[in-house]
Image (tube, chains in turn orange, blue):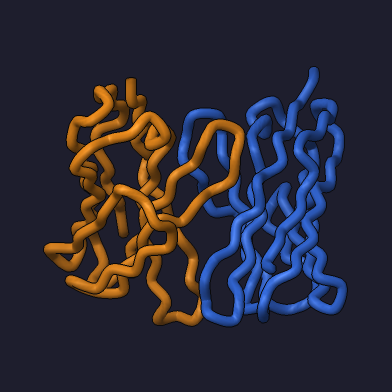
Length: 114
Length: 109
């Protein structure tokens, strides 16, 4: 069965510091991968998605970037965090070959930028 | 623009039935999803509708009317553990998933 791992679970970082969040998927190959951010009491905002190694699509202009160095690894980064980067970050994967593209989420990382 | 509307919050009683509505306006339609999200946790997949009608999964059912741009999630025999936010999401013509803000469901004993 497929599993998705996301870490760390919580993170407190000072303004201006770098960020690296990692997500890995097991049990499937060539998944679609996604990074979302969820502000408190709000819906999910898609940040990046990837359909393959090195293929990244950005949905929202910001000081974040994403990379996919391996098939089942997706990394969210920032060189300098802003206060507004605080939120709940979620990685998700999907497998669209069946025609039903259901997204499954990792446990999330709660980021507080102080 | 693309839009998904859900009530912000609903309250129901343990053991009762509750219906959470979702209306959408998107550029094309390729499916509608319902997710459950407990406070502080990640969303988990509940159901998927692509054709009109009712899909039943145990205590949970989801209905879709594409002509009306409308769906509902029906929860029966409510339990305290059903207290959570319920997210409606629609796949548009570009196969992008558009998310609603979610409905917070509060279950009272």
